[in-house]
Length: 149
Image (cartoon, rainbow, N blue to C red; front, side):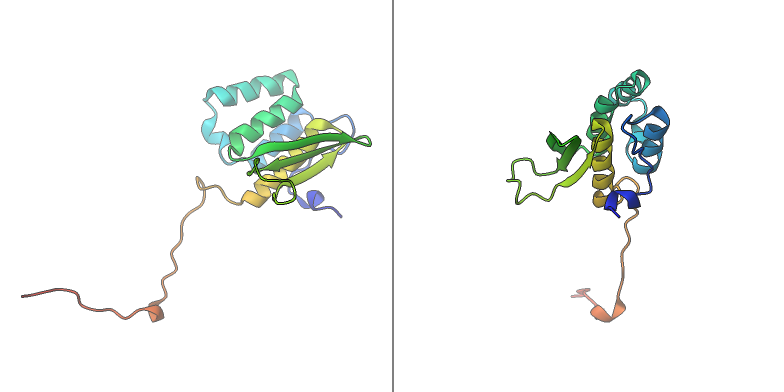
């Protein structure tokens, strides 16, 4: 069983590709920044791409909005499947880079699989994460630092 099949998002595996319901499901379950950016030019452009059914362009726009540090590193068509790699270090050689990779017969679906893997690897967004501090009282001894002279 592949790692992609364990993701909470359901991406169609048919060769016909993606549809508006599946794309919306991906946005609702994976995106942390997009709801806060609904009124921006980029989000309106993404809405127009989805309405037009331009799934490949919409997937790339979603990556630009949701994962600004990630870039498309490699996109190859080989033996009937698209292989997509996303990376945060584009200038690094392939063999040193820790890119996320996905493949599918449909181009947009391969890009969205890689997007979901990148979101999974990135973890919680700084916009939604709540910082926690663990105080261990055994690690220090209180000392009075007042100078009454």
